[in-house]
Image (cartoon, rainbow, N blue to C red; front, top):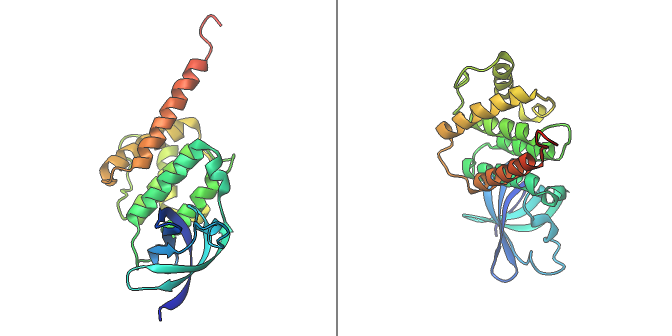
Length: 231
């Protein structure tokens, strides 16, 4: 008989399979990234339905098989339902989840990436921190966890920007989302991360393309709304 294990984690992906089942990819504290089958989770009235959506965070009780897990029950701690209510927030969250899915592995200690993803999702829902800054923090800290970050900025930046890069690199993820920066520093951070992404992110993330297309459309719409010189 398969062993029953309790795992704490976040659902990175939730895909329908067969008629009523789901295949989940969950980033867990205890086992890293794992594949989990949730039988009957799409059936109306299933106790697994609510807890098997993307971004659900909680405790997952699973039977462990040779190459995958079968979900027995889930105790959600946070659903992050607000993410789906805003297109921009949903695109940022999808991008973070895709990065986490790509860079984490089963059987590895992925507690750092797990906490980073959780805190980043929480930060996306706060009005006190710009989502652009959340993205910079998430991208850079991911590079740090992967051992791909270099301490020196890729090009000359002001002192405050260099300090911010160092602070992100050295600070635990649970303490990273309590500061803000000036628009000038944020712009320089984005420039640095653009260089780092090109250097270190070898994988083409589809969700990043969608996010950047959305932001470009929003920027163009904002420019059209700006009053002209005769207004």
